[in-house]
Image 1: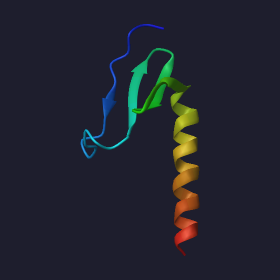
Image 2: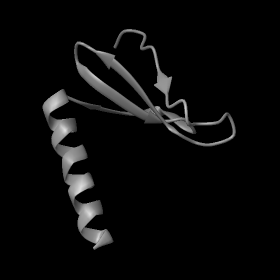
Image 3: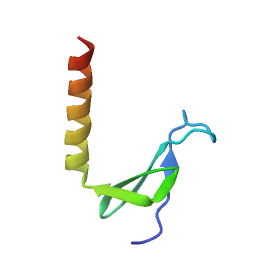
Length: 63
């Protein structure tokens, strides 16, 4: 895998663990800052469907 350029949310602080994101032709890569060796890679449509499902379940749980 080529060297990835990781980004984290501007809401994250240096002291907080956060999810970091990078993109490449292979897809979108996610990792947690305190375990950078564990990388999850997903294609855009699959990640989009996952985020939609999480948002839908979160909305249902708040009712």
